[in-house]
Length: 156
Length: 282
Image (cartoon, rainbow over all chains, first blue to last red; front, side, top):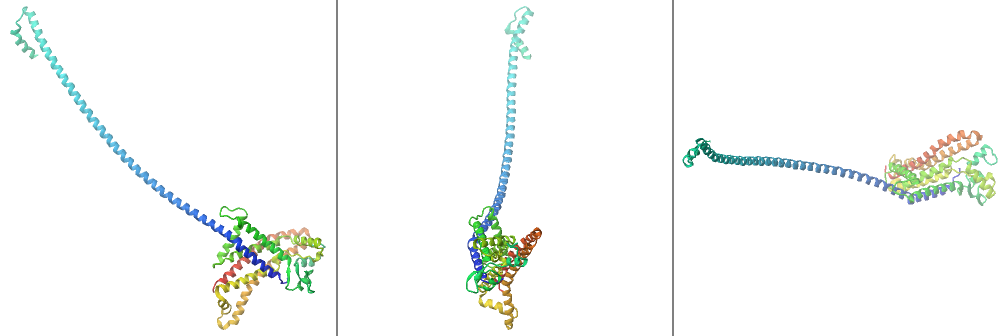
């Protein structure tokens, strides 16, 4: 239990240990700890920034999607309108064509009828003459009676 | 027990005596052969066992921490680095909580105190006869010494010189920082002008002086007393018949794990508190 030189020896070794610790142990460890906490803080900040960017990008994407949807709807509408128009035009065309064809056919038929009538008329007079000759047993003067026969044929 | 079955009282005394080197009253230098010779050497003697163990433990501490500090990286830590970081962060947290000034010394100082005192306290958990018996064997076989004259007290913190050496160093720092922060006049004023004003200077000085001196003394005695008592109980348990020793020494050792950490922590914490008080103006 004696107080002696050990006291000073302990104080000196204590001072040396503290000095060594202060010089060579504490700074690198604390520097590493600070660097790590900085790294972690940076990482967290980067994550925050990334999530913000992501949000922004999603918003942009949804806006672009919305715009393109609107565009597409517009285009489809226009196309529909154009298609309807084309169908209408085609219908009109077809109706007009049909009408024209029918008219042409009608005209031709009428012409044919006329032509047939003409031919019949000419035939009738000949037949009438032939019939009359048979009935009368004699030749009839074609010139004298042709007027009557033509009149008859006209009445047919 | 000791080598030649000494009596209980001589066994205890033997364990509580440091291996002392110094000058004998007749002028020759050498190791003290008993407690009386050691006491007669006066102040100019040194406890070889305390110094050797404490310095070895100090080197162990610095070697371990330096090893980790050299290859420390901010990436994923592992093994020793984890442990060192844990200690450093713990001490750094304690310092930052209590001490609000700026000082490069206090945190490493606190770390050194905590780990070094812990290691010295930890010696207490080594069974009481291992190291003394080893020392005795070495003394007898290598130096031909009388086994009764080979002392070895291997827990440095049960030596008042070790604890007082540290607490006086802390005391020097307290005075140094008080003067550095407040100036000499501020420090003297703090000692003399409060708490009762300038008409009571002698009384104030007495009061504050006692308060100031009580810091290192209480710091040293607290650590010393706890560890000395703990060691003494281990020694007392060691006197019992060997068959029942474990029934007492095991619980006491387990309880002591708490005490050695707690005392190291208290020494560190009080050092921080005292130094932060030295930095503040009242």
